[in-house]
Image (cartoon, rainbow, N blue to C red; front, side, top):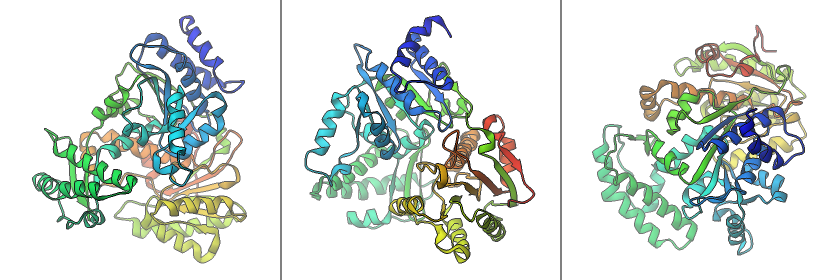
Length: 496
């Protein structure tokens, strides 16, 4: 340890929320201490699931609360993608002054004044946790010493969602205008004309007519995004097209948006279990090469998290229909083998999900728990799986993140398909600009997906991967996929 850094590390450890920090946590805090000591703006911390990122964030935030500065107020904001993660963190650490805040709509069923009380507490506390969406919209929040970005691999996706917009036929009908004709990626002039002359005036009219504040803000927010797009001097870094009757408008880069976000704090700490490709990650967000970085291997025993590769079929789009029947038969054997255990099947798409769940339900009936596209349907499926006393099997295309299947909630899992991003016009354009971006998105999704079932060093689950693309993907990306993860892979003649 650098003696010049010992003071910052000592103070960070003194503010650690538990009596003992693990070696990887101490090493991560040493890097964060260097960030403060050297005046570096960025620290990127990559520690696997279960390594205690929340404790690192709280220790850093509490240290930031002791710092004084002319341009930035003492304290820190901790940002998470999901409200439930913010609530979990607050429940664990409220005794040390952590305050949480959600958007107003999440308090609407509570007594009058609850949102205002929570907002006042959040502003008064020097250590606050909220979701990205609220922070990015709440420009009135004071600038603080540190911004801590949890699940930081999601940052580009979050910023894209905040800047871009979608216009569905239902939106047009609600605004009193006809849905537009289909647009291709080369129809920018027609898209701009329709947005400016037809849609934007209708959106602004709806915003003035609505009396419910939440609905009014939704119309205002969409109108603002459309207006910002129309006001751009150069739309060369944007792409717009119609996809399944929905007009999608998205920026091709988020570096400007990221820079604006980073400017709201003196220091930025980015935490994630899946950074992997640091050069691509930094390039995507415009983070300088001088950023301090730390990466730790998984502390989970490899024997507790085997990944059995059994190449049943090629799940590429052109050959998927031929492969799925045999995949279903193999999944049936696996589910039967784990007859007394809960598990999860990752299907990647709703079309695959329908075929898999229908096939398995014939034999296993109520053991199979699945859901549709509605977010509430997904949450209900998770709840049914978790509270069930039986050996239920959760079948889903959308459990890459945001679900914790610890212990007996998943003793086995099946990956039907390597989760390549859908090759829509946006993804194709990004691939031509930066192929490594595409590979990194897939690596993130794959490792996060497989990480749903083993949540601590005493937890255990068996993973089966059935897509024959898995081997070539891993081989092609050996440099970015962590060694501790690849060490768990075994090739099986049979997955039973």
